[in-house]
Length: 483
Image (cartoon, rainbow, N blue to C red; front, side, top):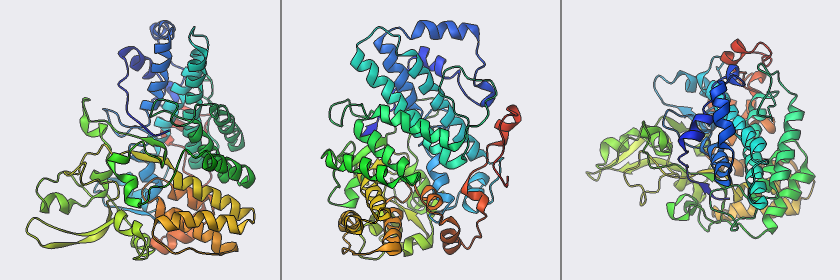
């Protein structure tokens, strides 16, 4: 799959979708008239397609706020709660808490993450249950159901890693106050959904912007890696590699050029629209708004709305050698203003999402958010092979990523090899929402954050708390230890 353009949903479907899951208390509360509207809606192939499109639409941007899974809240949280990002956004208490490891169950961003993921899951559940009875062409029917399964698995994969034991909702109608399922059961459901999604068409045989066989296999490899099932992680990653559907761009800078969207390195991405909603600010991606320095807007005419809300840690920046091509592509530390003067920045900002040719004014962005890139598959395979003791193969695949970054090859063994792979993940996926997950699954969160931020991380921060608002309305929800 490549990037998904946000689809404007029909009024009927939007009304149906918005019935679901603004909080736990809304899981099953519905108006009888709404039930009639739903029963009348799921009748045709067009209805089925629109139902799945509504699930995709929750990945990106909305007209009402940062409610899309990959709009900003989730990936920013994974960067701040690590050794990757610091918060510069004044008044953003929730982000300050994430960056300083002082969050609690009242954190607003944690609540938003929970809410939008369960809204997405509920819409997927509706599609999975209501599409099969529709009288329509079977190939399309099966494809749409498997796309919804992929999207449900993606949402649950985020949730189970962030919160641990969570409610496992897989039907349209569930208990009003669901309890939590063991994380193992959640992973079993994720794996089941992704195995079904492996039946999706390969890349190139389906409309651009939809889940594909390659995306399902790649996500399944990541799930197995997280579960420390290295043999299956290796097998699934290798299936993607041997499909010959994907490849690295020659230059790291090419990954983020608008002309290369939907390109050979993108297995699953989310695109953002061009506004048009009631609050168009929220319909754009916020990469440039959040990550480019405010000085750009002040010092260069034509550039607007660069706020610099988040910046890189010095530890992250200093971990790059000057020979690493990704360093100059990823970071901005100085620039030349309209008067020809060099403006040196006090913080280290992230510019890799800014395609200056396609979006010279910066600010609001239609840049893709990369959920799964081919380099992720290569490093997943390298890590699994390293854990299996196949050091020659692991070196071969980590060197593919190093070579693209213009770095010399390595030949490492044991712990040094595993650390190198994790380090390449750090440098390859800056501000792509991977870092907290990587540090948690490798048990290195305390050491890495202490080094980068001089913060003593408590063990409780290996999970996020279940949002207090959800527990207030659902007494069946326990709290994670320490919160």
